Length: 386
Image (cartoon, rainbow, N blue to C red; front, side, top):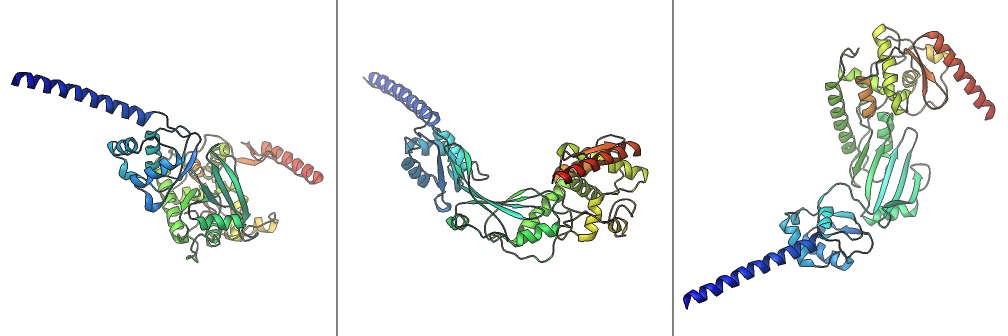
């Protein structure tokens, strides 16, 4: 009898294990299968609700998941239940529960909702307010205005007051430290706590997310740390034979390259011209350095250079001084820094605008003079057309 009972118990145990295995397999299929969401949504996870239970309720209300138990079990089994980030996230149509867990725990920039972008340029700061349409995954422009020139629209104020938008700075390559510091001080989402601009060239022009209420000094510190890291890596990877004695000299050259061309493919060619000139003892003779000697980076000259200014002696006038100027003349981007430390191998020693936005390069004065003559013709044609 006991043998019979033991045999039946073993049978029940085996059947139970098979049923459990089947249940687990079914749950896993449900967890990884396409979900019930008919259209993409913008899922908001408030800071105080960044936990599995609260989020599960929201997902059920939105119709994004079919089972709270399977969703929560899967999140805990994957050890991601405690990694939920607050913010606004785009959840695509038919997203599986596994995909949703990954979306809300991955972190990084918000992938949905409103975004306020402050584009700090050479002459002005443009503000873009846009909203992501979850259905198309494309941004829809809500408003734009120029700081200090036009009144901020009501939609901008409403987006700021909502408290759920992402805020981002986009710093233009070639802006001076004074221009950047002055622009940041005029942005109403930042606390202006800086009176003096950092050293020229020490700020990395790129994108920076921030939180309203951050100080200008904290943004500038991040920019300086980023630029220092970029310069250190580029200097470590520099090619041999450069006429540059230090990372600081590389930064000076990079700033000149940045101001001389806005064409990405030309940076290393322009760099080669200046490197060739430095190697042969020729003066750099570049207009942006003359302009910096006049403005000291504060504002824009807004006119052409006079002959007296080209001949006027300042520490930055490379028509007068030999070698590099004493400081950078702007804040160069990473590509310009890398170009300064890894130029093309050429014999170019001249270049001039070619009318297309780029430049014509030459290895000798005769060819250069022909390129200059062609550029003067283009200028005259444009003047007549205008």
